[in-house]
Every structure is written in C-alpha cells, then in structure tokens.
Length: 380
Ligand SMILES: *Cc1c(COP(=O)(O)O)cnc(C)c1O
Image (cartoon, rainbow, N blue to C red; front, side, top):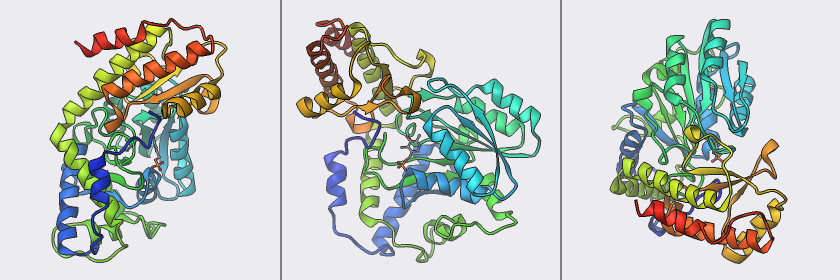
C-alpha cells in the first residue's frame, strides 16, 4: 500500500511467464494491435499515436518533452510536488524556456495563476502539469487546465502516471495533446512500460519541427515504424516481449472489470479507509475536493516516530506504506490504494495494523472504532 509499484495480480505474473516469441512474430504483432486498441479505450481517445513506450514512466515523460520541445520554445510548467519539477528539467534540457508556476505541496495547480501566466507571456507552445501528484496525493483540474491551454493556442502535456485506471482520464474529452502514464500504479502491472498518446495536433507539431528530435530511441517518427499502422512493421528496438504480455493481461482485466467500475472501487475503498482513519483521529493533508482516492496523504499523529511505525508495519504485518517527500518528510504517510491492491481486505488490514502499532507506541489515537467506521462505509 505504498505509492507504487502496486501489487501485481497472479494472472498478470502468469502471463509474463509465457514463452518469449519474436518481437516481429505475427502473433506478437496481433497482440501489439490489441494492446494499442485497449490503451486507446483506457485513455478514452481515438489518437492513432497511442502506444506503450518500452521503459518506465519517466521515459514516457521524456518521450513527450523531447518530441514536442525545441530550443527556444516557451513552456508553462506547473509544479505542486516532486513530479512537476521533473517536467521543468525536461523542458530546460531540451533547450526550451520554462515558465514555472509553483503551488504549495498538498494543493492543486491554481487555475488562475495559469491564466495569468498565459496573459503575461505570448507564443507559449505548451502547458505541462501533473494530473495526479503521487508525492502529495493531489488531483488537479485537468479539464480546466487543458481548456486554458487551448484558449491560448498551446498544447497540453499531462502526467497521468498515477491517475490512469484510478480516476477519470479523458484524453479526447479534455483535449489532452500529449500524455504519459506508467504500468506500476493503478494498472497493477510490473514497472517498466509507459503508455503514451499524442493528439493529431501534437503529431503535427512533431512533424513541423525545425530540428531533429535529439533522442533516437524516443523519436516518435522512428518508433511508429514499429508500432504504427496495421501493415508492415519494421524493427526499431527489441520490444520487452514478456512485459507486454503482462500489460496485455492487465488491460484485459481492466476491460473485464470496466473502467468506471474500477474508478468506483477506488473511490469506495478510499471512503472506507478515510472513515477508519478519521475515527482514529488521523487527518488528511489534502482538501476533500482535491484528494486522490488511490494515494492518501495522512498526517502523522503528534510525537510519533515516522520511520519506526513504517518499519513495524513492514516487519509485523508485511505492509508497506509510503513516507512523505521533501517538506512533507516526517509529516505525512502516503497510503496507496492502487489497482489490484485496492481491496476491502487491504483497507481493513491497514487500519488494524496502524491502530495496533500506534497504540503500542502510546500515540494519541482513538482505539476500537476504526474498523467499525470503515465497515459502515463498505456496507453502504
Ligand atoms: C511514479 C511516477 C512517475 C515516474 O514513473 P517511473 O515509472 O518511476 O519512471 C512520474 N510521475 C508520477 C506522477 C508518478 O507517480
């Protein structure tokens, strides 16, 4: 129950153990087409350029920035946690000019500040922001932010590593131009693959570049020789065959459950966890309207030794929860409810383990009430 990688279903692990076939084998190519089709549904897009990058979420991020940012391009980057900072790094490394908007960690991206930044700067090529900040547990208003980008003729680049599969991500509905995710958060797949999607407008921007894409491996023009169309496929790199079996199986499982049912499961179990924690007297870092169900940042009770509690949970209950990052280190725990790990059993285990551990340390919490509070929500 940390911030990822989340638990992987035995079905997905079993898929990974199947025999490795060639990355140009007709059967493999048929599976690639299925993966692309299922990713389109997951992203809610018709974008032709939708594919899994053969590397972790960070590579999906680089794929977006290295293809879309050219020297001198202005990009507004919103930072309200760890991952926005990496977007700034990307823009600058590819020669772009970063206009950084900062919001306090634990709060969403301020839509008004973004509007003001567009008013103060012309010829902005793109707006980049993190939909679900895993470092703080905050959801930003992706729909409104994309709208502002479009009103100003800019592309919208979105980090959906933690959001995809846990909450609504509507690429075509919101007009997202470039999006990247990861397999190890709410998709419950092993880490190492990054689903991405580019809108036609973004593809056009890549085609109209004045300079070559500075990365050979992530150059979308080249990658599409292998992943694009439905006709002949050319060797680009050796795809991580077994990891793609895993992704395929995870996507099949997502279709079996239904995307909306998966979001509802995350929300309901978050509500149950929250009821239990609050009954115990443990509060949340993030305001209710911006809370992510899949990543719960909770305030560590007064006088409690952060590391001692996490170590006890791991040793005594085999339960991992995440530490706070940056300024939030020692102040919050990050409890993940992601994908396959988002279950009633885990919620009840977490509440019980936390209660017993904190009570043994004489922490100021209320005992004997959490399980009942959570159960009441689950019975709704
Ligand atoms: C985990 C995460 C990443 C990085 O993904 P990796 O697979 O670790 O490279 C990027 N952005 C967010 C919001 C994340 O949670």
